[in-house]
Image 1 (cartoon, rainbow, N blue to C red):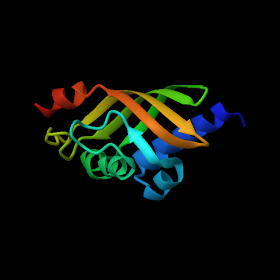
Image 2 (image 1 turned 30 degrees about the horizontal axis):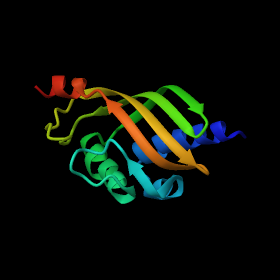
Image 3 (image 1 turned 45 degrees about the horizontal axis):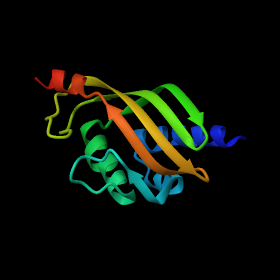
Image 4 (image 1 turned 30 degrees about the vertical axis):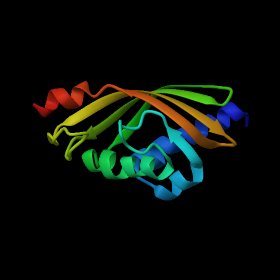
Length: 136
């Protein structure tokens, strides 16, 4: 398996086991302890534990049935780029937006850097317009 194939496998696992299932054990296995989330919410910690806590206490509480649909994934050197859709029912508060009980889709673009099969850095752009639109 090439480095790029391994990295794509790790990113796929992160999306399904960590984001969808909320698995902390999977998170510990595939994320480096020195990990930095470069797009953590302003004013919050962007390290290893804080990133999982955001997934667990914010994302999974807001969208308990979250599913990830990976549209495109490209690996180059130690980077993986994903274009994905996050689908879920917005039942809890998400970044100050009260739950609407409606199904939403959040288009997302990620850049993940990996070393030795572990996440080291992450950047994301998320479009939460559907969440905002359905909250009203």
